[in-house]
Length: 167
Image (cartoon, rainbow, N blue to C red; front, top):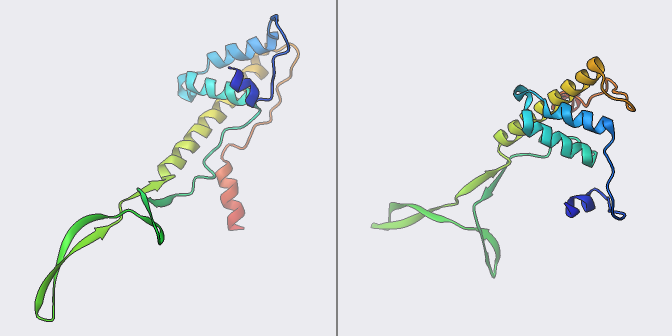
């Protein structure tokens, strides 16, 4: 708990407790009632954490796929990928049959496209949760000292980025 407070730049200024603002209670209640179709409890917890930190959910803009060797080795000549034997090859040279090991480099794909797709699905769930909360408070009220506006983050920011690249 103290680490989270330090990350947010908060510090405790002594003892005592105080009641939360009624609007904070109303928001917590609305988050607790989010339908499962838009993430339910999981997206409610993510939304609450992002609100406390004053951030938005990432949508995978920095997840470019990369092929990487599974492991590296260091020699006096520098760093190189670890290889494995993946078969044998026979060939004839100067009338003699020779056999050599075939080497391959096992790889892994970091930031696989499915990771970016998962991040975008999570972003859309989060956006839907914000829309649900906005509509709930604008239609039914429930806030005493705060007003909910119609402003929302973009629904699909990756499409705006794609359009900017195409232009």
